[in-house]
Length: 327
Image 1 (cartoon, rainbow, N blue to C red):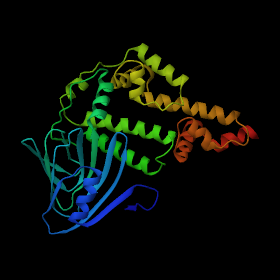
Image 2: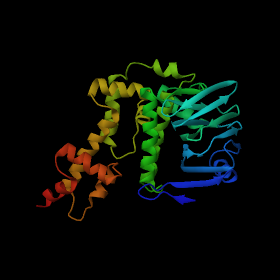
Image 3: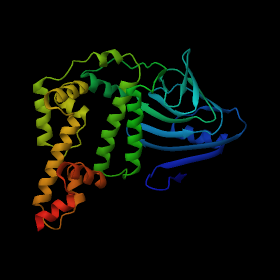
Image 4: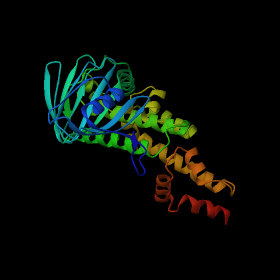
């Protein structure tokens, strides 16, 4: 096992033969059958990590191969094709994915097959069925029937591009933080929710129409209560989903309600409150305080990003704000 050099601290697995690639995929995802079509040599590489609610892999085989997988039982498998193409089949259905145009979702109940082109590169997500169903219930504001996905979906549409961006954001954030500690776990939980929501919105499944038919927006009382929760508990690791659950409304309805009544999204409102609290702390803290301590207190775990947001909002850097108080 190697580690990516530079700022991304994500394990990378490599193999130049079928046995090595087979072992890596079997360990991270599922036992399977791997059939090389270009000869025995491969240029397999996979950067990967696992969180409580998903497994992420950035995968290429560097050769044309067939991947024959058994049913995943309690997991869905999602492929976001970034380059090259694949031919996919499951349960009598067939399709083709191509780089940033088409992706594929494999349901847990049937075995499936993926034929990779020699230049195919994919984000491969292993998603627990329980996690997706729980996320669906949050979005709908009620439990739903078991999910059944169409085999392929559009990555070139707005929702598909948003899904790729969400997964890429998770990859970058995971690679720049420690995977240990309460604060990092809170951030990972937020990012997981973000990705799972985008999966449900970008793909086609038996609840897609239910999501599209949600109420236009949350009632004003729901928005007011959610805003109050943010004001009272701004340091907590809120997500749109946990806010929506706390005020008993669907996540998308809460998004629309905030836009309609306050002109911002729930997360934009939360960021504004946190920036104001951070500024207040900088102006009232003793000289021994560290800017990073105040930033993390209010949910900003990347100091450079916090400094950028702070300067955009208040016209000065956090350190300058602290010095002004001391002068």
